[in-house]
Length: 79
Image (cartoon, rainbow, N blue to C red; front, top):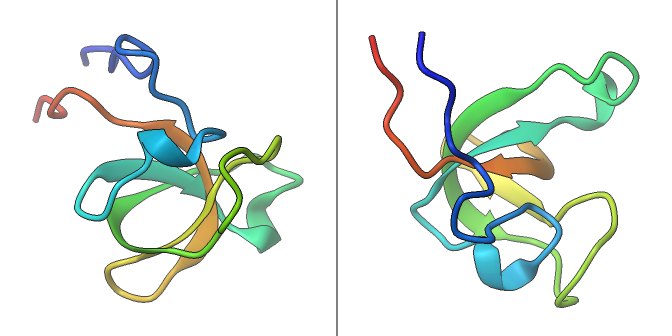
């Protein structure tokens, strides 16, 4: 399995400018904060209005899941 280059272009989940509708991201849902379990999906809506959030920008994924962006995925995952 290849490691994704998440921070390659300065993209991280704390900066609103790095998160756009249609991007593939890993989020941490509220109920998964203790375990740190990540869920991958495509951003449908950005819910955080501020330009920066220390715990990650809150988004809604296609399918309705809500969480804070832990990583912006910049490379396709190998299967």
